[in-house]
Image (cartoon, rainbow over all chains, first blue to last red; front, top):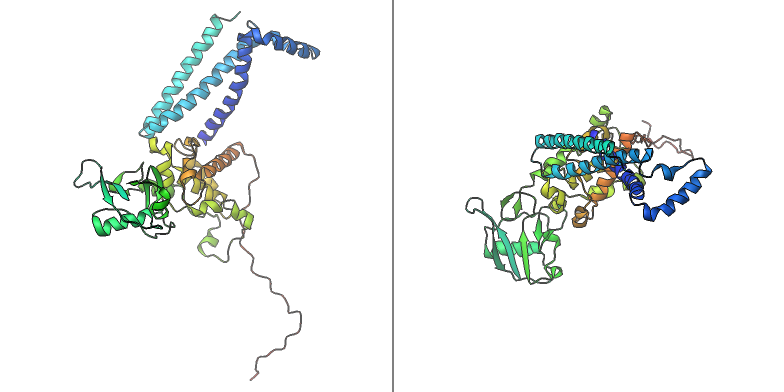
Length: 123
Length: 266
């Protein structure tokens, strides 16, 4: 059952990464996207929201998107890597060692990314 | 036709090698006919499996001209080649010559409990009647019943080539065959067996199994449908189907016209 959840999460994070990556690209490459961002602002302004300006670098939402993208990309990538490595694992015991090692690596990378975002914010 | 056959005798050889034979054939002859010709006329030590000669048993599965096929189902003329290379099925240890050790096929198949599981044990042990199943309910799993356990799908599977602990398309497709059978109530028993690290989630949907199956079974489809079942089970969505009931005995009716009693009264 555990693997059912893990695989399902792999699919969900894959879909979410596509969306968050799009937002991430818009904020990092505003040149081509400012036009779209300004139009989004106009629409969102009708509802009292200023989404586009909030997601620009330095905005509060920018950090949230970054952290979320980091978490989902790490999970998606590490789960995929685990699947590939498990194919050549000679036994279930070796498979468990691989899984544990990848979890530790994932946590370290997440903490590293989180701290870098904290101390080196964009904008 | 030149038959280039892989030979390996574990008692004599360190590694496998190829031996060529010139086989006289006629249109309509299969690769199996060619191998039998070799065995009867050229080299009686050649070892291979065969049985039915009509592609229903799966015994003669081999790697012929770089593709896993049934030797009895491969016409020499249709292969359209000046030289036929015959090797044992890949991804399995070799017993001798063209004979692979198919333990992985049968062990994985046995592990998924390939039989109808019912909770009404009294009916299973002392059946009173058949279980009701509509034609459309049969169609849900019918194609997967054509599996002849030849092992060709495992030989073709690129995942099984590297991950020897992988259950394989044959076992997983058969697991779906039983889960989809409305007579069966064993989904709870089988789900943990195929949800592990080397079960259904290790399939990458290469599709080589479906492409190579000689009986037209689509194991890749079976695996995807099995994934769908497991996801629905995990998320607790979808209606739980009731198992097939036992068919009721026919109702006795009174005759519509009075039939005289023809019994002789003594």
